[in-house]
Amino acid sequence: MKTFRSSAQMRAWSATRVQSGKRIGFVPTMGFLHEGHLALVRRARKENDVVIVSIFVNPTQFGPKEDYSKYPRDLKKDLALLKKEKVDAVFVPSVADMYPLGVKAGNAVPIKAGAVSKPLEGAFRPGHFDGVCTVVKKLFDIVRPQATYFGQKDFQQTLVVKDMVARLRLPVRVIVCPTVREADGLAMSSRNVYLSPSERAFAPVLYQTILQAKNAFLKGEGAKSVEDTAKAVLAIAGFKVQYFSIADAETLASFVADKMPKAARKTAKPGRKWGVIAVAAYLGKTRLIDNVAFVFDRR
Ligand code: PAF
Image (cartoon, rainbow, N blue to C red; front, top):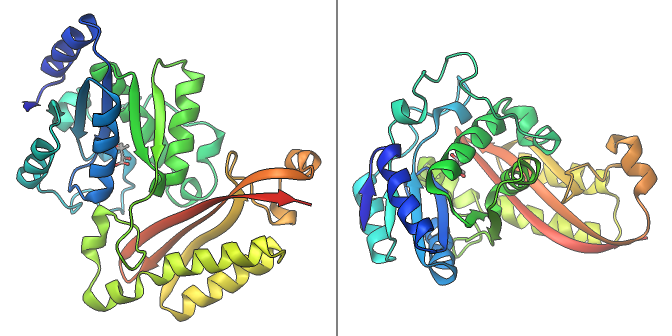
């Protein structure tokens, strides 16, 4: 397994693979890998000739009060895990390499995320998805993958990246893989390491509440009432909810009637729809996100 620290080296190595007709599958990560990341790597391994993984904690997607400096890192362990998965190359660039003019320079984040970035995460983490799009676009330019693998855990991120790929006509297929969960249902996340033992014991309530909400919604309860009940349940369990939203899974427009944009209300015809329940909540100091997507019949 090769490890490249500079974008020039990574770019040159990838170019030789592309020239010899190899299909490159790419998994971008911020490291501190868990089974969720490894599931993406395994899928990439199955579907491509060459698998490249990047490990880069991207400063421009963190807000000033967020956890950039304390984001968990363990490069040695990550490299050992990736070697076991028979990854061909790992790209571990420095901040200076990815942002040669600095992260605070004017236009350090030149790619602006589309409209789907605005609700949910976008409302609580302004600029987050511009940082994600900027770094993902730079990584695609360096690695030149035909396929890239993202986890459904970051549901909105998958929509934002697909939207960027479509708008910029990038020659890469975005493949979304199911969320990997612990035995008790907690979605795997590098940030789970922040949870204290008692918080960890309560953390699965997040997923349980989403499933209960999904059942209630599918049985015909209104979106507003389902959301309100879920928020109350989570508050009792000790969560500070930022959002709990039942929404269209393509646009993230809320299904709560008075929050639905006019245009969406007009086109809300009966038929099969793809919905998502997405939540972000603090448990102590740890911010957790999760979601479940589902198909339903709009009457
Ligand atoms: O999902 C992540 O880990 C990050 O947002 C990504 C896609 C690697 C970009 O920094």
